[in-house]
Image (tube, rainbow, N blue to C red; front, side, top):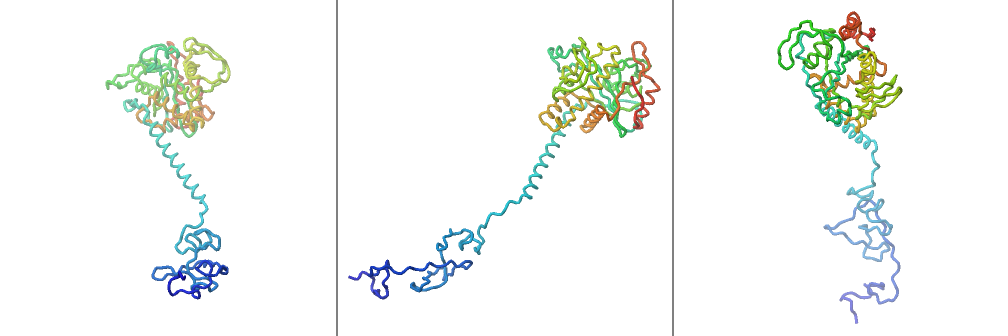
Length: 423
């Protein structure tokens, strides 16, 4: 019985194994089609044509679509004719390009630099906003002419503000009300080296005519002589600046003040300050107990070091020398890369220092930084440090040497190298 459709016979079917051939013999091996690289498959009315066999035994032999299995290549792999190969006219995904390291380095550098700039600017404005600008130098009258360079009046007060009873006991500060100047210095910065001049608090000075910082009332000078620290106790920073300018002829450009608590906090924030003590000393009033040699002082010890005077014969003069020495060492410590580049030290140090500093209304963070770097230079031997020249004493007050003071002020006003020596 013939199960093939009508019109089909053995002849037109052929003796083909697997195609309904009645023969038990398999058809001869067929040759696999070759891949035609770079040639688009033909279409008729949008329908791909079937390709015949290359040995002529099929339904025709023509160029057409091929799967590519005869090459053993995966469809779409490099070298094949599928989409994504080099011969793909559509433009599929090719080999992954090598990374552009120059471009990556460029953008990494831009990101890092931008981050540093943003952090630096942010830190600057944060720190600048923390300055306590409380002193108004515009209230100071009859001021000397402006000289070359910049003059800072640096004051250490004995203010106990913010200290608990336990802290007062620990720091040996006592419990006196109000505040007085425990130390006073003039720092001159200029092009011919920096100069740090200590003003003994027992210096004999004349209180001139001045305008009250709070009352606005004018107080006429009567030729009254007092110790220098009495000017501060009488009417605060403005009268102290007025008195220093009147008795020296040197214009003060900026004012900086720090109290007991702030001083100790700054020292602790930088991890202590190393100093070389020439000769050991003790003082039960300040709590000082030091041996000679190099040592690192914490906040409590540093405060005792700069306040001690009862342990010395020339009490006030030796104390001013110790204050100069320590403040220069502190500035050097604060300005080191280990502090400036270490945020875990920099921010606590800035916070402790700026919270406790009192400055004039015109002083900026740049001015404060210049002051610290100048003090660091003095400590490193790039400048000069001295006590105000003393010629004698009267009634327990130290009298300045007028001739030397005049020469000193002239050299500072002209921004010349200081040749005057102090006590």
